[in-house]
Image (cartoon, one colour):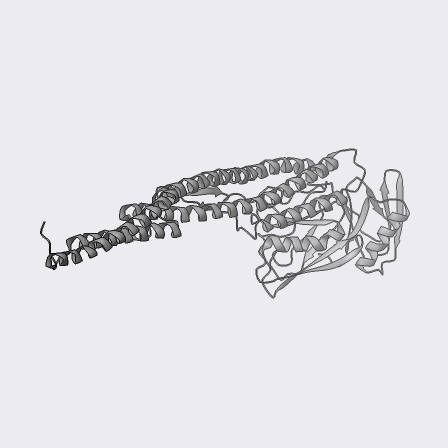
Length: 463
């Protein structure tokens, strides 16, 4: 090799190696300070593409786990409501069994009032959890996206089908059931519709305590079921229960005598509908005629004098007072809201009614359409089964989501490990490489210094 002043090849080699060693040290420090093996595309383009896919899947799976946990919380809220409704069904069965006993000597109206109140509460709670008649938020095929499938439409979601998950009194088959032995009286001649907003409908109800006017005012968003519940809230004090029959007509029921006249505005019933509690044995008296009534139950007779000058309500009150004074509590007089002077005497048990001079003969009608609390028992039994079906769907959905969460968490762990193997730096190896890079850098600089000084040695040739 010739000695040259113009070109110091040895120095050039040292400079090139020093540059490479500087790059090596820079990459090592970058990996150590960032924690990543791949800090730019050039570090490992193929590995970066794979790592990015893993990271993208992780973002999907992490959100999927959040989705599933939110869905579990939502189902647990629904489950709590279903549990409450299940307990109320237990109480309904207790009340039904008590009323069905032939030896029951209490007031079935009291039992039925609680029974109807529970039906109203079942409807309220069903709507509260989105499985009622006015709130159907959760009555759908709930699809919870978790990810991890072949694509967004395949094996990536858990479905909980609650499209038939209604648990209101209508859905459970409890609507219209009662613990009263008297039959239900149909008030309307057509299927009920909600009273329109800003409109109203009145019901004049006659009971032993006299005539009372009940008003239902229509509001925006009202439903028929909601207005029937509003009607029940006002009827409860009179021991009367309103419901809808299988064809949607309004019906009423009570263990005591009552009459009802709808005011004619339309809505829950057709215009000017009238009904009397024909499920009871009944007789009639026309007020405005002097009369001496005799009502006999067993061996007890009440004699009631009527002057003929009383109003319809006054005549009913006098008859009821006379019956009570004689110790007869099973017969009740109520005003006939469809007849200006009519008074109806009604009872769940047999009685006779006779009259003195001045009035036409009284007619005693046989009892018709007597109700049966056993129907309520069977309805509650079926309701328990229907509710159990919905609880089964919700419970299975909770379990499915928990299993899906476990799988997703496992996939997150495995995706993270796979991404780490590609993207993360090996800190131990890079720490060793840093020492190596520093030694090489120092050696390169020392060698370059020697290479640079070698050119001055050629001057020795001129001495």
